[in-house]
Amino acid sequence: MRASERTYETLREEILDGTLAAGTVLAEVEQAERLGVSRTPVREALARLGSDGLVAAQSARALVVAELSGGSIADLYELREALEEQAARLAARRGEPERFTALAERFRAAGELVDAGETGLAEYYAVIADFDRAIDEAAGNSHLSAALRSVRLHSTRIRRIARHDPERLRAAAGEHLLIVEAIIARDQSLAAHATHVHLHMSLRHALASIEARRVA
Image 1 (cartoon, rainbow, N blue to C red):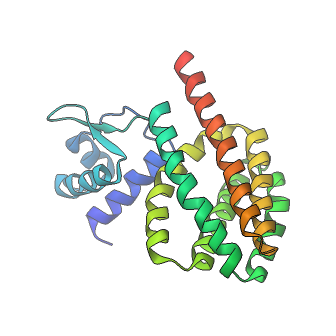
Image 2 (image 1 turned 90 degrees about the vertical axis):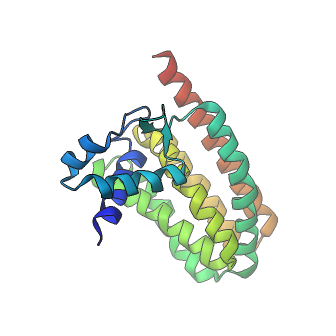
């Protein structure tokens, strides 16, 4: 793997999981020393992160991890509604129920993973990732999948806000289960509605979390 690709993936994951918090200054020299690479791979990685919307210019010479504002989160969820509800409809129409039956069982057990420490949380998010892949494959629309990949990059960052809220994680697992069960039943309207409910509850939680941090 090229140094720039490795640097990009490392910085991206650190931003997504909160290791590099919003507002953190990303100086080329500092990051190059920390990651053990030259400045060129860092410069290339930061350019890609800027295109992803994960890094923003604080000034003409300083880049920072992009902020998660209430407004930007609300904008993202407006897009998620359009894309994910349609993807759920298509998955219910075109998907193989057997693929989602296995996911249903995993979501029924997902609540137990929440209390199993970091290993359990990693497995919990692996179930979510497998759900996303199953939706993409069942929907069978490459353009929709490409748009969803971009949206999910930012959704992952927002989703991690809930990692310290076991009650929300358990509720989200139940919401995903309803989506999966609707797809198994080939009920397009119900799949879209269950997706809408999940996104609504996720948005409420994300905005409340952002506000709580702001007040604190």
